[in-house]
Image (tube, rainbow, N blue to C red):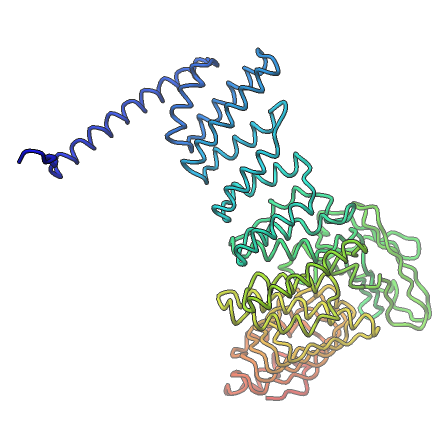
Amino acid sequence: MHGRVKLKSTAQQEEEKRKEKEKKLKIYLTTRDACFNKRKEGVLDEEALQLSQQLLASNPDFATLWNYRREILLYLETVRSEDEVQRLYEEELNFLETCLKMNPKSYGSWHHRGWVSSRLPRPDWARELGLCDRYLYHDDRNFHCWDYRRLVVKMSGVPIEQELQFTDRLIGSNFSNYSSWHYRSTLLPLLAPGSAESSSPQRECSSPTSSPQMHSHRVCEERLLKAEREEMISCVYVSREGERVVVAFSRPVNALSVGFLLVVDGQPLQVDWRSAHSCVRHSPVWICELPPGTISDTSNEHNLTVTWTEKRTHRDCALYSGRAESWCRDSATDLELFRSELSVEKSSVLQSELQSCTQLLELEPQNKWCLLTIILLMRALDPLAYEKETLAHFQILKEVDSMRSSYYSDLCSKFMIENTILKMEYAEVRVFSLCDKSLSTLCHLDQLLLVTHINLSSNQLLRLPPQFAMLQCLEVLQADNNIIEDLEGLRHLPRLEEVSLRNNRLSRLSDLRPLTTCPKLTRLDLRGNPIAQATSIRSELADMLPSATDLLL
């Protein structure tokens, strides 16, 4: 009919599209080959710059071409004036904006923009911050843009307070903005100049993680809670019984590869050091046995010095006459062990941050990012004063983010153990009790070296890990009403006398094999375990543990 547009058939349209694609591909490949040939021949001219620009405009993730462009630009820097270089790089920034419009998450484009900005004679950092603002408001999870923003902030000296205000705006528009909460966690420790945490701002991108969702948790925990302890010998323990010396360090070390020197009464001794458990090569606790007769006579006084030659540090310990044991160590206060000391300024900022997060939580009571941030801020400010609130927030976290409930349980266990260690220190006792605290894991066991009695009953412990063997002074262990099925940590505990493991999951005789290395064990309670129902178990246990005269099954 006259006056009507003739519609092409589907087959005609597909054929035209195919021919158009082939034409574009042919042009692309021809341009690529020409560009590669120029690079192979070492040609660094304007034509090569234009060829690479044509290719990158359609495919901004071609890393080799970005490298070639940088080679060309570096050469042109040497043959042009500063004003010409300024114009050249400004044109490059304009070209990069077109690439980012095509792919806002192009790693090559953001990386090249950072390189260009650092080479620009007179950079316009306000423009670059504005560019980051636009892209982050468009997509707050553009990690490449966040990385570039950190570079711009560092290079231009943007005040930390200004960046905190920027995160406020993003969180205000999207309360569950993970990236902004993460960025906040890297900014807060930098508010206190000269603090241990602010000495290496580059670390904010370097923390390894197995899951992006957990990265914020770990970084925030590291930044707010990690105490930078001096590398030192934190404790020396000496016992006449067995003539043993136990040394604890501020971090795990390998005694077989670093130098230790033991001097007793002015005489250097050659001794063999071993870790508390054979499977732990890097350990904070190391043990040695002295030659027979060195310190066994209780009427004599002895002076011992352990030197960590690698770090040029040492610790002395005096064993007085009439005493069976002695130790010398630093007081394990919370500021030294589990969190950094806060300046007045930093404490004020974190307190203000806690108030803000608490107000935000009232608006969205089940927001996991806000809950965890509040927990970590409370830990940084005063872990003992906020213990009750911390436990309540952990309970909510496990309910609203059930996929990570195991992580929260382990983190809560860690905090509870830290608090109990602090309370034990203040009370100056050698008894450690953490019953009915829902513990799912054990940590900081090197801090329990001097503990003689420990109660871990009514928790959710599945095992006593190899590190448990660091409790070299332990005499009584209560771990009833758990789900323990592994006792690997109960090896070579020379003073262990009583063990109560009622209502656990020990089912095989081999599960109890580690106890054969505890020579003073006299009482063992296994009631409520599957192994207690095995036939002839009492006689088998009597053969395996001859010193255990009081067996409860």
